[in-house]
Length: 88
Image (cartoon, rainbow, N blue to C red):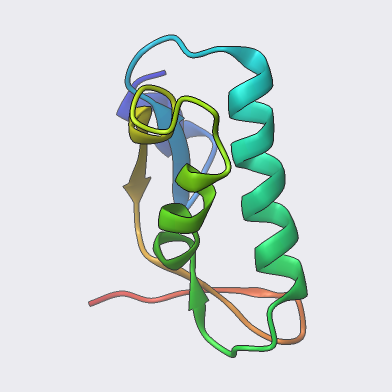
């Protein structure tokens, strides 16, 4: 996926992997991000705040967990389960 593809889909941010990873480990990683993001009571939680703990959920945390990168604009989650894009 290139940055042009992200622009075409009008996505403010994207979480991607720099290299091929095992499917079970990246599934654990993704589940951890979704579970922590939806269950958090903190207002203004960033996707970047969830990544360090999600890396620890992987069995191969330095191979799979460190393969992920976030491209795009910073996105914060509100308590109302909506997303807000911050420009800055």
